[in-house]
Amino acid sequence: MTFADTEEEEPEIEQASDPSVIIKNAVTTKDLSVYFNKRPAIENINIKIKRNSVTAIIGPSGCGKSTFLRSLNMMHDMTPKAQVFGEIFIHGENIMDFNTVDLRKKVGMVFQKPNPFPTMSIYENVTAGFRLNGIGSRKEHDIIVEKNLVSAGLWDEVRDRLKTPALSLSGGQQQRLCIARTIAVNPEIILMDEPTSALDPVSSSKIEELIYNLKKDYTIVIVTHNMQQAARVSDQTAFFYTGRLVEISKTRKMFTNPKEILTEEYVTGKFG
Image (cartoon, rainbow, N blue to C red; front, side, top):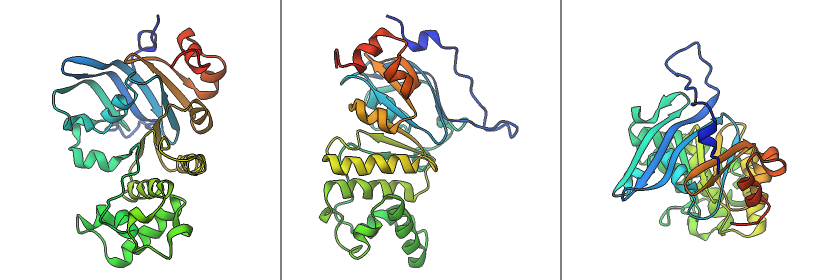
């Protein structure tokens, strides 16, 4: 079995400190490995993700997709006995140069199940990051709420009930509210961990349309089990298996002419 990281050249890191360099890659990982209780979850992952693109991470359950995703904003810092090795660069800057608060402003996260703040209204959810830090006036908050609910495709549905509890929304609306909350703080990258797995087909379709529209302003990395979804929304796809990167390529090529036999077997449904 041949894995992509054994074939590719080492990732060339664009240095953000050099003003002559135009940073083309939003994310670059170099020999990234994550261990839990000294057991590898992912090993030697070398990936480049271009700016303003959607990258789908696919693979069977337990292959390391979510582990990879969560490493991009240091979420493993909250897991006891987790160890992260290698390097991760966000727009040419090593994430170890950031504190976690600043990093998570740059790299937002949308989870599998909608998680709006349950005691807050729709309005308060969108402005939570600003109010907790005492930033902005009420007028500024009004602008932020409308702008980001419009971007999340939710404004027309909730504009007349912004003071109602966030939990009064449907599941799909709650997930779009969580996306609005995420983009309100102006991240550069949005990580999505199976954002439609708990939603009905209509709500899922709205999220997919939103992902497509958001990539003009953000770089999006999405973990998905849904092959059709990966084919619909992503520009490139990375296939993980047993904690290793098997192949990464343009999505069309991945699904029509993959380089690795293992990839072909997975995308055609022979296992998974």
